[in-house]
Amino acid sequence: MKRTYLYVLISTFLFSSMEISLKLAGSSFNGIQLNFLRFLVGGVFLLPFAIKALRQTHNQIRLSDIGIFALTGFCGIVVSMTLFQLAVEVDQASTVAVLFSCNPVFALIFSYLILREKLSRTNLLAVIISIVGLLIIVNPAHLNNPLGLTLSITSAITFGLYSIISRWGSGKRNFNGLTMTSLSFLAGAAELAILMGISHIGSISTALTNAHLATFASIPFLQGVSLHSIVLLAYICLGVTAGGFGFYFLAMETSDVSTASLVFFIKPALAPIMALFILHDQIVINTVAGIVVIIIGSVITFMGNRLADQSNKMAYTDVYDKLNREPGTPGELHQKLENDREQLHEEAAVAKAKLHHQTTSPESHH
Image 1 (tube, rainbow, N blue to C red):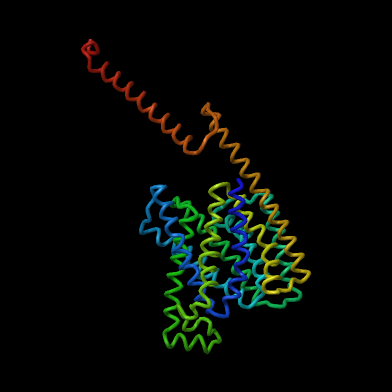
Image 2: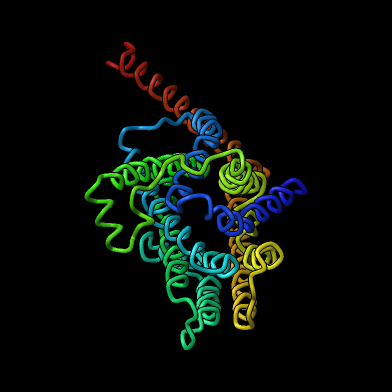
């Protein structure tokens, strides 16, 4: 369990430093270019672990799976993370970090709308509280940076959608989270590369520039990569992107989802503090109040997940009780069911043989 919390702490630190490192790198790289590089390198770094997971589960990538990865990559990387990067560039890193941390709230809403999952009272209360926290931070009566707030919230909404689509794809093909993440990263990076290539077409580049969208015109691929910037770029690609997700999934594998999700509950409090010391971001009173409210909503979500895990474990134990044995691992349960099935087949075969013997023996014709 100590190892699990170590994974959680490392992942929390890496994710909490994400907005800060992207803000620092913004002066050396085009935002879209940085998005492309970090998910390309991060996806490649996680790929060996994804391949190992596929082999362990005896699963294979089918041609039809490309559509799933293309969809998750487009929603999560091309749309959400591009909006996120632009938000970091035009707003304070601390504000973006807090607003983006609300993406699990939107994921709950999308799980209800798309997957038809029921919203428990606890989750519904957490959603309402978190939305109140968002409104306190946004402060609609006095919008200081409407563009940054819009980009941050839209990024959180689309990332919540990405999470649900990823869960749907994972359940459909029995891929684990690491496999979905790695291949979604690579698919999203490939889609970004295509769009970046299109941005170099003369007429399109000119039109984007004339429309005051120079950020999207003639997007460079490797410009700015130098000895001076390579350390920060490596930290963003390998540390924040690959390491953050890698340690998050390690925490999930060694414990449960609710424990691993502590990462996203601690970040709203930690990220602004880090931004204050490193970037000297100012934290105004309404932001502090909003952070407190969002953390309360996060705690309620965490406790709700904990209760749900305990309920599932009790149901899991009941299955074993019905099988007249002590609780064990899912693999042991599966083996027990397979043994029972084989025993039934053997008994059926013996009964069939006896019946055949009776109908074919001379005595049966008298």
